[in-house]
Image (cartoon, rainbow, N blue to C red; front, top):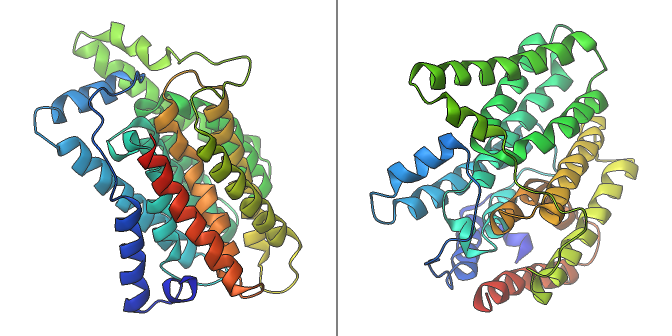
Length: 325
């Protein structure tokens, strides 16, 4: 199965789409959406689309497909994965909708979208050489925009800065450009809310959701733990392959193995310690999981039957979570 999907032929694309349809066949609408904290801008967006039946789900799914397409294009264009294929697209869509709430337009999906664009700018930092000021300006602006749609974006800022230091070099001037452009986005937003006479709403952008001082596992099913452990093992194997393979892995890919590990860490910390937004935030770990799992499944070394078995277990795990949710 994997051998067919990772090929760039039409047969692999069709089989991949069939896998997606089968894994999402058991979706059921969520009648009572769980308590989720929205920014004022996202609240306005949700209210505007709520007037049209099913528009929330249509836009949510379309947004996920766009993200999957962007991630696949970026990985293939910058040669981050072992080989170019349609496989990242299949994995991203398969994993981005583990829970039914993720089918709807949600803050985590917006944050993933901006993280993808940030990662793409970081990929370009490897090739730009000197004077990368415009890329740092772009990254800071994207961070600012993500803060307008997702409260959890604030927790990614230090990890993004560390990632930049890993793949580029530390420069206070560049970090200043990044932070200043983020501030300008927030400042312009504050001015707009002031001009329309709703400045009191602006403070809601920074009323962050509570963070537990201890881990809370009571929300999750046992089958989710098993799926999580499986992906943790796959990611660990792939990460060490990134860092210690001496042949096909480029220095660029090795460095970005560290960047995706940082994004993974940030997403997992938000999921484990976040009191609210739990079901939506599961998607925040999908970008690094997709990258690591893609390299794991596309590696020509190892037993093909074993990787096919693991892939089938993932599909069955996703279906099991939806059937027993």
